[in-house]
Image 1 (spheres, rainbow, N blue to C red):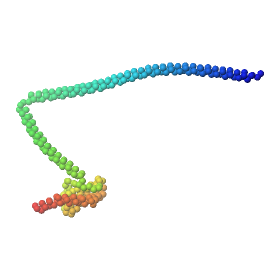
Image 2 (cartoon, rainbow, N blue to C red):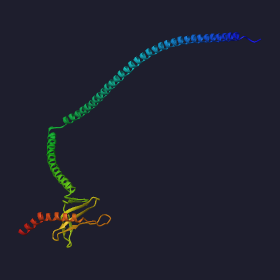
Image 3 (cartoon, rainbow, N blue to C red):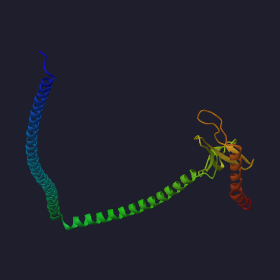
Image 4 (cartoon, rainbow, N blue to C red):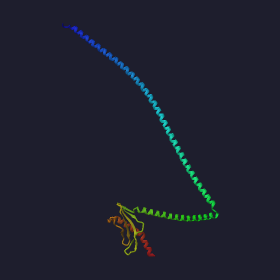
Length: 269
């Protein structure tokens, strides 16, 4: 038998109402569960806040204890350092006193020995020893005066050598890699006749490569004499034309200043 449309509609409405009621029940159950969960969350939050507050108090207490401990350790270390310094000072003082005591004992023993020796001496022997000591003192004074005089002469000689060394390292002419230095000592060579001859106006010609050549002046021929124009490898090296011209100029000036007046005095004599 076919169902009437109204009955079918009524049945559908009833099914819809039943489904809606079930959804309402599920929703209410979910709301209830949600309320329970919110209550549980609130309880847990309160419990967590209480635990955080408790932990904060514990942390602060521990921090205060740690600060007090560190302060105590600092004070203890400072006291240890102070006591160590006091102990070191006491040890040094004790060592000084012990050393002074030993020294005084040694001096006392020496004084006792010297006193015993003095008591054993007679006045005549003492006078002889005193006269001998005075004579020795006079000898030492004379020796000291001699040594003082020698020291003065050595100081003056050292000063002269120092000035010569400074002059030796101070060029009188420089151009590029070449330099000309004065030579203050006398150079004596054997002449062709076998006689010893002193060179006139010796000078050093130097090169930046480390080479040095000793030169001198021949006033009779107005020439530069090269004493050793070869290096250690037997290589020939000579000054440049500019250096030779400057050196010859200096040597001629030396001749005009020193040699000619000497020749005039010699002729006059």
